[in-house]
Length: 428
Ligand SMILES: Cc1cc2nc3c(=O)[nH]c(=O)nc-3n(C[C@H](O)[C@H](O)[C@H](O)COP(=O)(O)OP(=O)(O)OC[C@H]3O[C@@H](n4cnc5c(N)ncnc54)[C@H](O)[C@@H]3O)c2cc1C
Image (tube, rainbow, N blue to C red; front, side):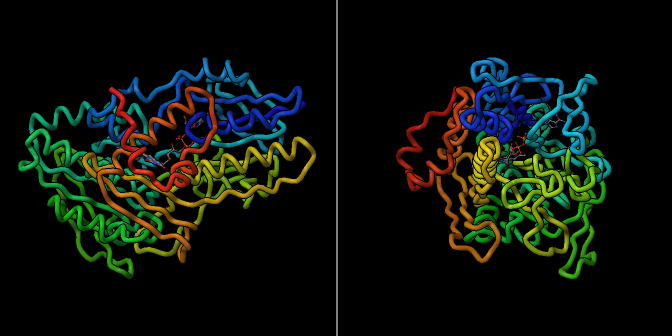
């Protein structure tokens, strides 16, 4: 009788719990430890921040669905992992001993690394639903008194797709409100070039995204290091190829959203053998930690080295398709171990991303993620918006129903069937 604990009930953790159910032997138990009773769909946060979605539409009560699936849900959160003792300590001082642990805690948002960055400072965030709701209130105030906008991703960031997405949906919204002519827009990014995305580009993402920015009159600064943010002012250093300061910019803004750098959450940070110096979990090709082989890790919390050196540090993104493959491999491996077999399943770690622009969008597919690649494809069109809506709809359905059918695999198998994707209705 094994106790399997999944830590974190975000995208990877909830799917992990569902995929583990068919792997159990009689008497085995799954415990999912979350921070609070609800799940929210992070990829829809950009829409929440400009009012295209309401919080309720992307939030799910986990208690009901976990009860139905016979998964024990504990909502108090984990204070510390003690892998040497096969034990997690919860925030209410209680403990759970485990036979297998799956860490799925996503990122800790490192706003504190730059003075004035983030919702407690002077820039907005879309990384958490609470931040997106706050950003919407700030956006409402902004439209009363429009001014310059800065959107982007700071040094050490690894999640660039949502920064582009937010930039373009914001621009679309400003045009719809007929105030775009009063809003100079600048994209500030640590990437060495537009469309790098932490992946050294995919297909023609450089050309597609630069051209979109030119068409929409959006300026950009690459190789950017944000020094400080004050109310209405961002100090940015632009570096050259050798990493020396090429130009300093003092940028005024009336509204700004900047993606922060990520690091591991406090419950796992600083544990010898478990994490790298940023607190990301070290895993082998089976999603297993080499020092503590009964610990698996999936999603944004795992350590992946950057694709190559850049003047300003940038990380590798971990997106939905990769995450689905990490979940499936980990579930199969834990299932095999429970049955006394070897863990052999390996994730594909391919990257697929859909960046919605509201009235258009860019999609890309990188197989494998690190170049040179067998598939290196990008494309632009209105269909991407509908594909993104389909992505949201399928994932929310899966999590509400406790299903684990992979969305991306299906999308790829259907060869991005645009007609099918367009039939998906947007939620009211
Ligand atoms: C704004 C944004 C938009 C994105 N859009 C897309 C997209 O369109 N397509 C795509 O493929 N990918 C997208 N991604 C990337 C990725 O798919 C998401 O970040 C996804 O949510 C990552 O899943 P995760 O499970 O690793 O982390 P999360 O979904 O963040 O879940 C982590 C969970 O762990 C919990 N947790 C943390 N610490 C503890 C603790 N101590 N105890 C218990 N629980 C804990 C958190 O509360 C959270 O619920 C986006 C990312 C962001 C930030």
